[in-house]
Length: 282
Image 1: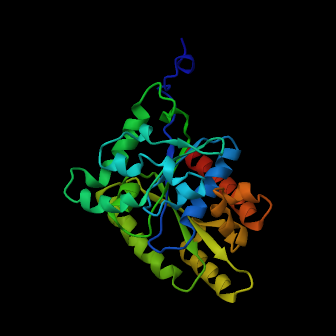
Image 2: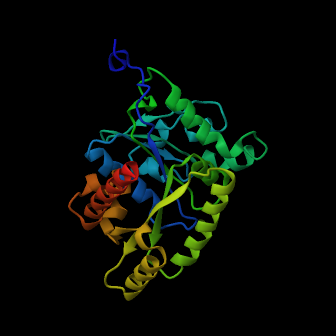
């Protein structure tokens, strides 16, 4: 009997790509990027698991997961009282599931302070998730895991970076953008040296671009001059629909797929898939 018929994970099935959305600065579009990228990837046949590791829980809210549905969360996984498969919740979006978060997660920093493997709790959970057999929410079907991080270098962000294959950095087109990015790059080097040698920056996404503002053009030009091909060609515009969508519990791509912000995220997903294919072929 085949693995598909038994529900077991095929031994030759590739592990999902684990991509982290991170920036030490808040309000740069990490959550918006995570949920809209997930939706765009799902629209072309990928299966995506979003892990909301931000105590604000905005990714969970933006995907329509009510607080009453978050009985067990990523907090329970990190402190060791639940498996990852126990806390996966299906969303309204076909092909997209989420591991939710609540403000309780803010206490994880202190609770994990003296815990063994405190920076590897998420990596260990993902390893266990992939090893499970015959689970309805098992890892065998996911092609991508997207992790939405808090705007800080807490143990939560370190867990995400330690578990990641690659890092996507949303970068707001404003004056202090490059300064914040330089801090993040130093952090990535530290993580690569001590926690996760395979971690790499896959790309930088320019967000909240305002074509009426000369500063946006200048920041975009500076970032491209410093980082070259690491910067995605697609630029995410400042768009009111992107801001409105989370209040309806929907990604912007479903809320208004024709708006400039949604079209930009669809283009970004295409660009990321192309880069992923190039990496596999290399």
